[in-house]
Amino acid sequence: MTLPSSSLSISAIQTELGLTPGTSATWTYLTSYSGINTWARLAPGALSVDSNKATVVTPPASNMKIGDFRLYNNASNTPSISGPSTLNYLGTTTITVTYGYLPEAMNIWSYAVPGDYLTTKYYKTSANRLAETSYLTPTVAGANTYTMTYSTSAPPTGHSRTSSQVVGSTQGPHQFIIKSTDVAGFTTPNQIIYADSYISDSYVSGQNRKIDLGSSISAGYTQFTCHQQQLPTLTGGAFVTPPPSGYTAIWPAINSSSSPVCTDTTLTESNGQTTYDFYLSMFGVYGAGTRVQEVTSCNVSLKVGGSSATIATGVTLGYSSKTHFTGSIPGGLSGGAFNYDEAWTVEVSSVTWGSNYTVCS
Image (cartoon, rainbow, N blue to C red):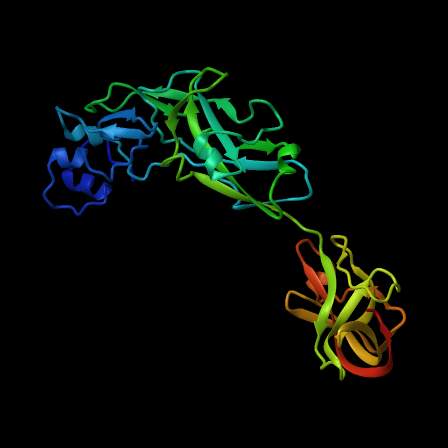
């Protein structure tokens, strides 16, 4: 909570700082306490920036007084970049990173001037962020910087400060849209992007970092995982019946057509598609070669995410050409439709083997 502007007590200040009321505390200790929120608008002492561009509060060297804690709020908001931890996108289109910047309690007294910029840049590697090289480019030039707004506020009577510049509360949210050419170079399906935010001076070219809005560049401020959603797939491979004599391995093999029979492929499906359409045979390793084995009766199921549903019972599977299966996806499987990032499997069980086969190799 915010301390009052008058009738302050030492115990109230100790409570606000998270200290135990009643313990011995000199003004030197209180005004120099490491737990003081450096972003608080009315922290006691002078605000400045160190050699690493980090905000620091220098305690009063003299004239320490209780008034330096008037209207102090230890829980004042700190600058932040926010957004979803995972940003889903499709293909190589642009990605919109929506972030909020909420420094309404931040005091920039003594080192920010009208025309300064709030700058946020994004990088593909933490090393690039540390070196400040090769940042991702927005679709609109200059979209990663915008002019800050703030107002001058007079501190309460009895405070050591004589003026206070308070950042406006309308700094966000903003949109940063990464170009499709940058997105095309992302590692798929997941690419981490690293954010860096700071206050820079008013020179548009070669903006100089004035105030870091984080602990350090190397530690990083915020990062997002950009996830490229993958189209659903359908494969064979789920076999729940012991193989016939002579086979060291046998499995369902699917394709998009009835021939060639000696193939096993992964089919890419359309997102939201509610029907299945594939050709199936039993392909296996026999001795030193491979064969397609006849099946006179079996059950065929679809499986996804640990759930399965039977789509055919007592069917035959060809050995000279694959057997066709088509129909509507059961509603109990993923809502009855293929969806992004799903891997579906064709499952065969309750098999009665035939005597015919095709030698593949």
